[in-house]
Length: 83
Image (tube, rainbow, N blue to C red):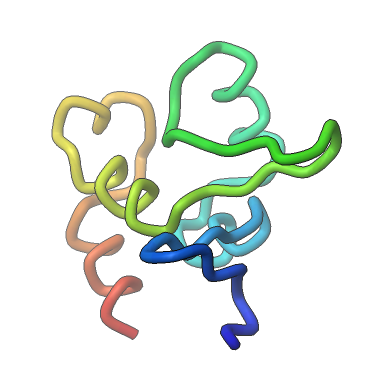
């Protein structure tokens, strides 16, 4: 069992704090993106619980179409993904 997330089939769901540690995006910024309808796809299994599929998050940060929404260079994100 992974410490960082919940495994559901082929998906690995992680919380906003994991995304913050991995990509440097503050939890508050992720919440703002959700309110604005932008940012990586997320799941809300319960009213106060938000989960992200780690694959969707990685894809979103590597997609050049969304680069204008964050100031995290793709090279830096790629380094964090490898470690």
